[in-house]
Length: 192
Image 1 (cartoon, helix red, strand yellow):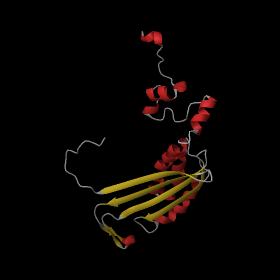
Image 2 (image 1 turned 90 degrees about the vertical axis):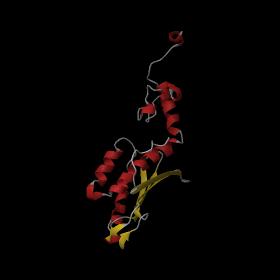
Image 3 (image 1 turned 30 degrees about the vertical axis):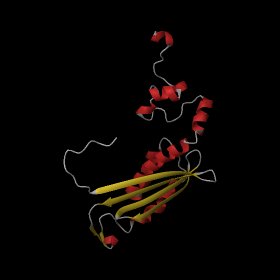
Image 4 (image 1 turned 90 degrees about the horizontal axis):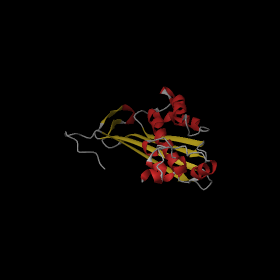
């Protein structure tokens, strides 16, 4: 459903596009790739890019690839900057190899902020790690191994209670994972 029509005329100035893709590799690992592009609807001066960035030309064009194992542990990381406002921007890309060995799990965001805060990282590449991590979880979840393991071990899947729809006392959990439903139980005699 689209948003309601704005109640005032407006002019488009900036568009950010984020695309993330998850791949299963033939070697049993997983590649999660993220791409971020920023464009302006107007041209403006820029010393590091030949004096001018034209309307529609990317201001930022950045890529990240995380290679993960089945436990969401980063076994390889690569960052690339194709477009940036300053010539020095691509120099930080190699620093994102520091993600190798980290696991996408509770504490991920805190560790990312520690590693790449301030001058230790690129604001845009670091921001891209959020949707890349979410894409990783969505990609690996499709394999259903976690659900199968949770069912065998009697532990609830880790995504329960992570959003409104997946509340352990909600209708989705009651329908999809009834063994982990914590809401009110209605018996047949109570309905009569």
